[in-house]
Image (cartoon, rainbow, N blue to C red; front, side, top):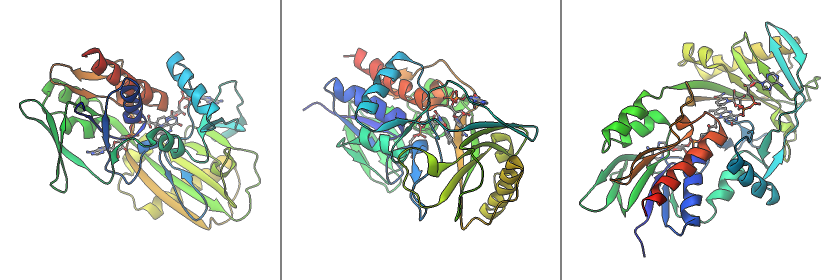
Length: 327
Ligand code: FAD
Ligand code: NAI
């Protein structure tokens, strides 16, 4: 049996790389510090149903991603989402329909990553702290002091700041990852007993602490007995309020939500806040993947392309293709 390839991170980039490698007959083993797959596509289970706190939907523009999407749709993992779209600029709310096709996985955003994970070998709740190479093979050390390996190659599919420290065996890659800044985002979910009296299902917001509003409960396939909503703060606001207590974040974003709707809100019987420290790359790059093929060390993630689900998937594919090109 050939020596497996280690993939650190089971978000969209890591899973995309894993699929391409397995399709080419290679063995992989995924590691993730979280309890399950998905990364920023994960969904939070709650008393009001699953809540998509990270990625809200995705678009597909690249032909390879469009082909993968067609398979996911045929398998019933992904559905089109046609929200009643609005925009709020300078406090003015207006209907803002467009022709852009948008997709969500069903019944929650993380479901697609669960399907992609399938039976792939993976170790969860395992934070990798070091990636090191012996004479022939790679090994990984985790936060509990365990050593994993041997591996023939390593793909680091974590957000740039976390990837940088795992790439020290290839200083050029590490410094590029360290240069890719990522912006934070506070996310809040609210649920109301009665449906709010608005047709709005998605809203792009400017000139507010908020940048996005989604009616989570009305996305396709969601099972929710209540009217649940997800609010995303802008990265600027989040940076200025990084250490604000969750209750204060919820109160401020709820007020901003009411201002966008131009209405008083009833009391939310459920609310949570989640801070994404590395939500989105501060800028796009055209790297595709970062590679040290001679050593067998690769990095991928949305930060190598664009801060979108599609960018992450394409970057994972690029890492796998570079690795496979080495034979
Ligand atoms: P991630 O999903 O971050 O995966 C990296 C994985 O690595 C994680 O699971 C993490 O636990 C793991 N990891 C990190 N360090 C270690 C370590 N040391 N050891 C082990 N595991 C480790 N995109 C869209 O297309 N549409 C949207 O509407 C959208 N909205 C968004 C809203 C928010 C609030 C956020 C945060 C993101 C949004 N995005 C959106 C972006 C999209 O979610 C990301 O581009 C994409 O999911 C990134 O995938 P990834 O695999 O590159 O990284
Ligand atoms: P998209 O094409 O739907 O949106 C791209 C951008 O165009 C939007 O952010 C919005 O500013 C604008 N826009 C699109 N349709 C609009 C409409 N009908 N009315 C008014 N403005 C409209 O999706 P794409 O390109 O796939 O981007 C993914 C989405 O993910 C974006 O909304 C992006 O902001 C969001 N995202 C959020 C992150 C976060 O941390 N909050 C991280 C990464 C992406």
